[in-house]
Length: 86
Image (cartoon, rainbow, N blue to C red; front, side):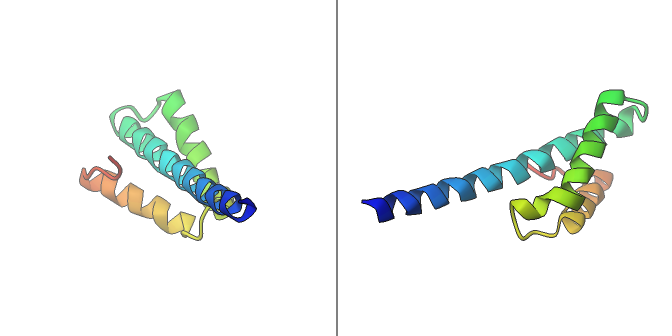
């Protein structure tokens, strides 16, 4: 019984990690799109800075994905008008 509990907890932690990274990607995409329309949007600028800090410094706590590469991919897709997440 204890073994099953540990396995389900690990799966839960993995799901939580995926959800955190996904939310950061969604928020970053939102901020970049909003800044394209209004480069002085304070809320979008703050979100962009928070997400970039996460991708550059904290993402390694949640996944092995290269945060800088992910950030650049989102930037490229936003520039091209492609939807990143969703």
